[in-house]
Structure formats: C-alpha cells, structure tokens
Image 1 (cartoon, rainbow, N blue to C red):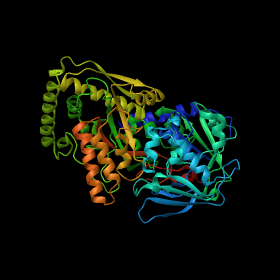
Image 2: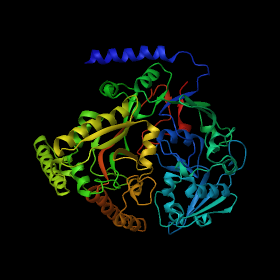
Image 3: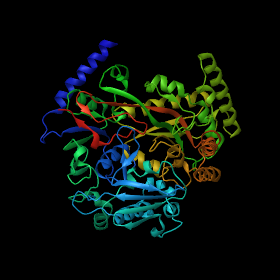
Image 4: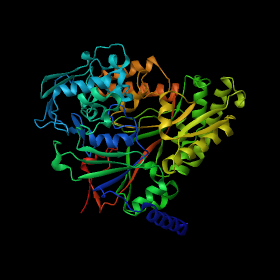
Length: 550
C-alpha cells in the first residue's frame, strides 16, 4: 500500500509540473487555493466559505477576527463601552478610518450599511444575525419597512451606538461577521447589485481588489489606508479557484500554492498518507455535517418518515469508513462544548454512545426495528408505496465532494436495505447546489454549518422559522418561543436549558435535519514557509495575518 501511495504522489507531482507551466503575472507574495469559484464579493449577500475568505480580506466592520482565538477584537472600532444591562454598545471609531479609495468611514456609513443588510430587497441570507439588534427581526421579516427603526445610530461622526433586543454575550464576535462590515454607500447606490465590479472598488478591509479572473484567480493587494496596514505582511495575495483535489495537491507539492485551506480539496483516498506529512494539519472546530429534509414535500412532511430515515443512518460507519479524520458521530446539530454548552441526546443516540461492538450492534438493531415500525405507521410498510426520491449534494473533482458522493452511496444502501426505499443520487455543481437549497427545490440534501461565533445560537438560530439559513421549510412556534426565551435570559444555566429544549425539538422530536458528524478541520501549508495561521474553534484564518516567510 505504501508503494502505491508513493507512486500516486509522484505521478501527481509530475502531473503538476506539466500542468502548471508558465504564468504571465508575477507570483503573489502568498497564494491560497480557495476552493470553488466564488459567487460574489459582496459581504452582505455571500453564503459560501470561499466567498467569505476573499470578501473578509476586502471588507471589515466594527470588529475583526483574531487569527489565534477566532474571537472578535477591535477593527474599525478601537474600543467600545457596554451598558450595565448589556443592551447598549457604544463603539468609538478610529480617527484614521477611510476606504481604500480615500473616502472617510464615518458612523453614518455603518448605520447605512447595517440598514442595507436588513433590507429585504438586499436578500441577505445572513440577515438573521440582526435579530439581536433592536428592530432587526421586524425589518428582516418585512413586518416593518422603516429602516430607521433598526437599533443603530450615529451619535457623532466617530461614535456608533447599537441597541440590542436582549443581552448577547457574543455580540462583539457577531460584529466581525462579513455581513456587518461597512460597505461604500455611494458605489452601491450607483451600481446596484453589480457594485463589486466597480473599478476601483472602495474597500474597508486590509486588502483592495486588484483583479478578478473568473474560474482562475482573484488578486488582492495591501490596502495602504487600512488602519493596521503595518501588521499586513503580504503585499499581494492570490486566491485560486478550483475543485480538483488532484490539481490542488499538484500545486501544493510544486510550490505554486502556499496554502490549501479548503478541506474539500484534500484527496480523500490519500488521507492516511497525507496526515503523516508535516505540512498537513488537523484541528478541532465548531462544524457539523448534516442532512436536510424538505418538509414542504410529501412524504417528508410526515415526522414519522423523517424519524425512520434518521434512525437507519449508520453514522459511525460513515466516519470510520469514509471521512477517516477522527470525526465524531453527531447526535445534535450543535457540537459538544460550544461556548460551554452540552447538547441533548439525539434520536438513535444509543448507537453513537455504544462502547463496544456488541452494544453497537444491539443498539442498531433496536433503531432499525423502530424505524421500520414508524415507516409502516406512516403508511409505507417495507417501503411499499413510498415514492422514489432524490438526494442532492454538490459534486466536484473529488476530495470533500467525493466524500459527499460516498456518503450518499452509503445512505442510499442503508435506506434500501433496512426500509426498502429507493433514493436516487443527484450530484450538482456548487452554484446550483446553493440555489436549489435556498429555493427548496430538493427532496433530501446534504448540509453543513460552521459556527460563526462560540455560542450554540450560531447553530440553533439557523432553524428559526424566519431565518434565511433554515432551508428546510420547517416552522415550529414552540421552537421559536424557546429560542426567544433563551435570548431574553441572562442566567447561563437557565439559558442553556432552554436551548437544550429547543434542540431536542429540532433533532429528536421533529427531525427536519439529521446530524451526521462533527467536523475535524484539515488544511495544508508548510510551517517553515508560511506563518500567521492558527487553529481555532470558528475556523477563522484572516488573510491579513498570513505571510510567506522569506
């Protein structure tokens, strides 16, 4: 096996030498293989991680992510004051706050940017983050159209005051999110949805846009007007697009790429040997792989059907045979320990918690029997009369996309063997996957979520009825009420108890999603050549901190 893997690596290396060829542009100081071609640079409407990495280099808000902890630290706000009740934040902007094109960044620019983000016309999937801001929920959901009611105001050109609905201990982290970045009002008003194509593009981040060649690369250059330009050690950074793990490994091994930060671009079949290399690094972070049901479609509107399908999914088999990076089978959407929170037991959790093979087999038998009973009770004994349905996942050149396919194949076999169900696999390209999921144009679809901040609400808020990230069609007033009560509770013990009740509804009682496993992070770079990258729980690696060592 070692010989085969060694030969494969050699072939990949030789293939890379042929494929790379000569490049017309001068090499950037740092080259990052970013993943699939991005959809947009607009920080307010983006949804993908690849988009967020580039946009996060170009736009910044009141706070920014610390590269070591992944927590929010001062950005354009150099400091802030918090009222005794935790509901009012007063941010003090830096005196040197300007866009890359020289225009000043004022408190009014933040007010306009946040109002634009919550405007339904902007169609921002992450606008639910503003539910914590006074008046945000009403504006996002269309219950109010008066943008002036959003709880943000300019006290003077250098002072921003934000009022929250309830205390939110993670609000400083939230302010570092892309959607809360300050954006150029005059450019957006002039160009509308195409404003990110403006030349020059006014940027508020550590970098400014130099060029964007679709399906090739995005080049950014250091923003000399950035408040912390002295800490930015890379003059030019290239973000390469691509979804082929073979090409990704080629580029890394030949030195054409410095950082391979998209886990989906790691060749799955080489996991065992790559993990032994010093330039491949694993780490723990807040992320969960799960499966979504479209509960607006029959027969998935029946909770008994959803529970039956969930109970036959062998999560341990998936992490041991397919992913093989030390992932843990997930019983809940929220990873254990998120902000000190411990999620409740999930449906079929008796199998995940089994300590030996005998216990595991017994637990699986119980779960399968219960699944068959539920399916029969729903009117489909042995799968009879159950319509053929599809399982959608994003496909690509391999790596993580190959993982999605292999999980789909295993899932398909489990449903056929234990429930007599016929599920067809529907691989689609990345942009189609995102679009179809948002439009609820699917039966069952693979999903995932990476925690944006270190609190369980970063996962649980996604499944509120009015969240743009719900994407299941599931609406549960009891769930929403529990989440609202938790938001209004300052006592952490009582708050976590309410969140556990809500998550029990989500993953054990109603099951619009099936938690599969908690992620293990994986990225590749040579620590002798690249610095400024640290493992953290939110998987945030700001580009301003990265550099290639001389």
